[in-house]
Image (spheres, rainbow, N blue to C red):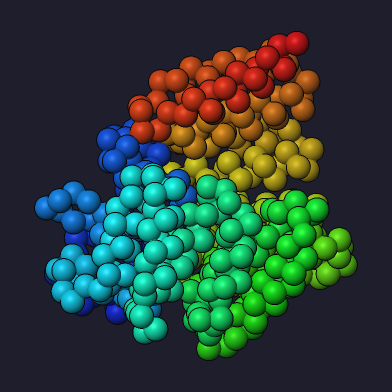
Amino acid sequence: MRANVFTDEALERYAGRFVWLAIDTENGKNSTFLQKYPVHALPTLYVLDPKREAAVVHYVGGATVPQLTKLLNDAEKTYQAKSLTPADTLLSSAEKLAAQGLADESIKLYEQALAKSAKNWTPFGRTAESYLVALSMKPDNETCAEQARTLYPRLKGTPSGANVASVGLSCTTELDAKNPKRAELLTFLEQATREAFDDPKVVISGDDRSGMYDALVSAREAQKDDAGAAKLRQEWIAFLEKAAAESRTAEQRAVYDSHRLSLYLMMKTPEKAIPMLEQSEKDFPQDYNPPARLAAAYKAMGKNDEALAAIDRALAKSYGPRKIGQYRTRADILLAKGDKEAARQTLQTAIAYSKALPAGQRSDRTVAMLEKKLGEVTQ
């Protein structure tokens, strides 16, 4: 969004009405903010009431310019408390609870807001999306899938409809194969996702479209259709490469680096990622992402020396919780090289680093995972 949305001239009219702020979730200086307003997935958009220090809007996911302007207009209406309906009030309460990380409580209120909404209620699409994302993160995949099937017909032909279908499909692929509802839900939501994907009237951002490809590939895999999944992957990578080639700036092109790398790794062609990641490292010399991704590509190629050099460059530039994953990558590379002692030392460093993070960034679960891995390496 930073590269493609926030730079759009259509947002200039909001300059005097909103104060724009970006929060670096990796920076320990922001831990107090993150304790009050948790970020469980990126991107997460907040509109905050500065007087009450409460969330007016909490939205997980990217947005196109039209979606963002609609979100801002809804937020302003709620903040000014103008002509609020019962559904508006319920949504406001749901977003405040979601912003506090209270998933179960927010889910109930999202559900009530949708039930009480009028036919032409403006925030219906955003509420449906937030409701399903909350269910998927709980996770309650069966309810997520069933609700997506219920909500999609009302949102058909809109960006929210595309997101509802895609999130619902992703939830369905996570259901146990023995679940009696799985086959019917897969059929409906796969068709809905493809319908939304192919609708030229529905404006979908490039990274959201990539996410829809991911859900469609997972659906084919869930139905043991290896040929169909392979065909979709080829279509997906062609889309990503075209989108990257047509980008107007280096920042816009780099948006697709992680998508392309993941797909190259999935297709067992990691060498194809090297040129783009080398270019991104040149374009963004202070960014730890390009060398970290290069390390993953080189490791998959069996080039462990190059992988180790790349992850060390990433570690030198990184900070916050993201650094922990890089320590793990470094340990894996060292194990692949046969250097068990260096891998053990790297994991010890990662554990100490994790424990030293401030409260808003520290995770006991992550520490336990690292300690378990250290125990396996020490054996």
